[in-house]
Image (cartoon, rainbow, N blue to C red):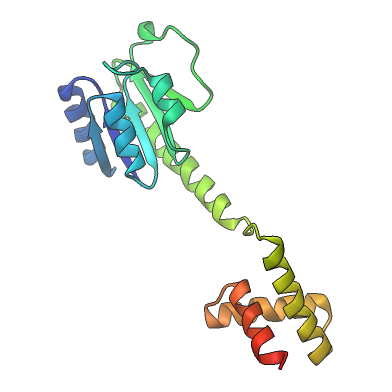
Length: 181
């Protein structure tokens, strides 16, 4: 995960990138237009887009609407340039920029993103009906052959999966192949 600096002036991009690097942030991209910022974002796995409110080709609202969900947006501009209310998913810092506030805000955004990724990974996978049936069939084989209850069969399959580096579908296929002969 890195930061993308997007400002219409090259000098602003250079200054922001310098602050980022000095404070240990990864610079994943630089952009002078909204389209270039989106291009960088779609080429990265996620991160924080630090940008101005207006570019030659679009404004920050249009960029936010097209920004991948894996990105947070940090808007940096003069308060007087904002003619509209900020969307809930945009964080704002006014110019002149205070470096400590900037770095602190970036660290907070990083922590929020890390939490979102962790929660997303911890969700159980969404399975099709055919996959669910395969898992049920494998549990039924274990219950019939080994006298297990459904929770015992499920725990056995989970442990087998972890011990052998398989997912639950692969374990189900293995059970059905070898134990239902």
